[in-house]
Amino acid sequence: MFNVRVYGIYINEHKQVLVSDEIIKGKHYTKFCGGGLEIGEGTRECLKREFLEEMNIAVEVGAHIYTTDFFQQSAFNKDHQIISIYYYVIPLEPINASVSNLPDFNILSGREKLNGDAETFRMIEWQEFSSDAVTLPIDKIVADLIKETHK
Image (cartoon, rainbow, N blue to C red; front, side):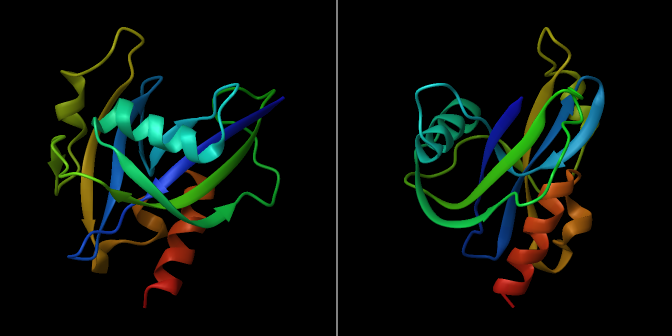
């Protein structure tokens, strides 16, 4: 079975990159913002919905960056193959969600949802941003692409 994920890359005017620090099934992850494609929606609509749900912000979906071109098994369900699609995003309004400049997974423990998952947002300074800054294998490839493109 395929699991299609759609992610947005936001780089602000200070050349900081938006990421999401999350606790998923008890483990810590730093990843790009976005989520799962739902039946009946396109990838761009999915990304708009995800930013609205997660950050309560409307975004414009920009240029396509990357789509997974290799086999990636899901870390959460061994019967699923992950296909991730990445776009640049531009906020259409000021970001009002709480955004930190430091990773702090301790903050998340108070925000955990009933299923044990939690999420917070962070801006990473350009000079500190690399594939080492994110956790998921496909995100690492995209981080390298972004760094190469925005030298």
